[in-house]
Image 1 (tube, rainbow, N blue to C red):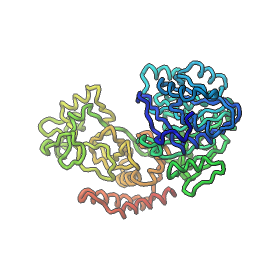
Image 2: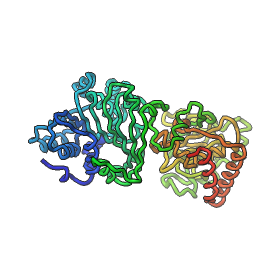
Image 3: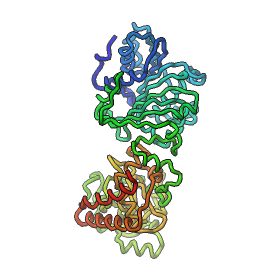
Image 4: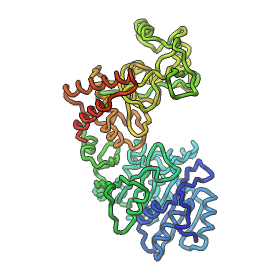
Amino acid sequence: MQTLHSTPTSIAQVLPQKHLQSYYTTSLPIVQYMASMLDVQPDMRILEPSAGKGALIDAIVERYTDTHFQIDAFDIDHEAVAYLQERYCENAQITIAKRDVLIDTELHWYASTNGVYDRIIANPPFGAWQSPERRKHLKNLFSDFYVKETYSLFLILALRLLRESGKMVFIVPDTFLSLTMHTALRAALLKESRIIEIVLFPSSFFPSISFGYANLCIITAEKCNDKQACLSNSMHIIQGLHSVQDLSTLAKADRLYPQHIMKLEATQQEFYDTKGHRFFCTQDVKVYQYFQSSRQMLVSDVADCVTGFYSGNDKLFLRRSSENPKGNRYDILEKEMIVGEEEQKQELERYGSLLNGFAGERRFLPFVKGGNMRYHKPDWWFMNWSKEAVTEYRISKKSRLQNTSYYFREGIAVPMVSSSSITASLLRKRLFDQSIVGVFLRDSNSEMLMYLLAFFNSPVCNTLIRSVNRTANNSANYIKQIPLIIPSDTVLSDIAATVQDIIDEISTSGNYNQAKENHIHRYISELYDI
């Protein structure tokens, strides 16, 4: 039988059916750590529900050489199953079968009868495409859970397949820790298992499979039917790993934590009591307090957060300025076709709105798209806002003429997807794209608007929103939940004036004095004590 050390060193080998999203794990540090956390005892029955090339099976066999156990290894792909059957044909401890685990009738019956397995280990598919028919079937089987993301279904099924005190070890994206669609999964994990530890690490530890939307984690949990025992359980969240080799350190029996590794200890009750049962993976006690306090002001208490407009055919309706360094696939707009401020003012005086569109040659309006720029975005994009185009937007099934009462109002533009940190710029009463979350104060206050602009560009805000949602997605619903502290009038005026200076500098030179921004950041950091 092929041993662990003879497997390939690359940990990402993708099945021919790419829609299965089966990324095979053969990284020694990852599989050795997972096997160590499984804690296999004699005569245990083990399940590997998405066995792939057998790396996790190898890790178990090699680590527990002198222990008798039974492994049921399943996979949905016939090529993987044939490969595994050939590899393990002489090992009576390992049974290989082709099974679609998520809809397997026998497994669901076991799940309904207090489980049958002592241990479950898996690197399940994530991001796998599901046909509408299959999603409907999965929704019948997992009625309370989000069925468009397969890994979460593997997690909940595994929890139900475990016997009391059975243990599971899974490597999955970390999105289940915070995303709203996984609220039911978090509740189940917190109420029905004692979570031993969750190790967080970058997706780059998974070579050639670097996810833009999330990082990865390994969760180890023990089945427990006593809700109170689960909620009182003290669990660990480990983060700050510098390389995948840090997992080798964690796999050792005499575990010693390198200085750079951070370990957060908290009861499951603390996470269960948060809004949406979210896991706030931070060492900062203040962050917990902000999210747990029912009296804490949120962004939603002072502002509306909405997404913007989509034409349905940007190639036809969108144009770029000659100064725009991006979007070469879009045609450059002649300046004579841009509706001027005076014409917009006249339209507002005549009709009280710009929503009817413009007649004549001048029919393009400045448009704010995504892209991480702080404080000020130049007029690089323009949308066709002629009467004919607006009529098309109203009747087309592809366009999204949504939240129109917020168009052409002063507010803040926050790109829905960020790279390393959240950013924001002033809308300047421009039309904004669906990739933008527009933040609009309910009470007109220019200093408060500038303060919010400063706040959304601060490291403190980034810490807070990543506590709500660990992905790169800054959707309106997550922005609404950010705790907001308003400074004294004196500090508010100082920050507002400094932000205006920064905007003026960017408008004239394209750059700004970093010391001014640092001055603002210090204010906000002291205000939040983070």
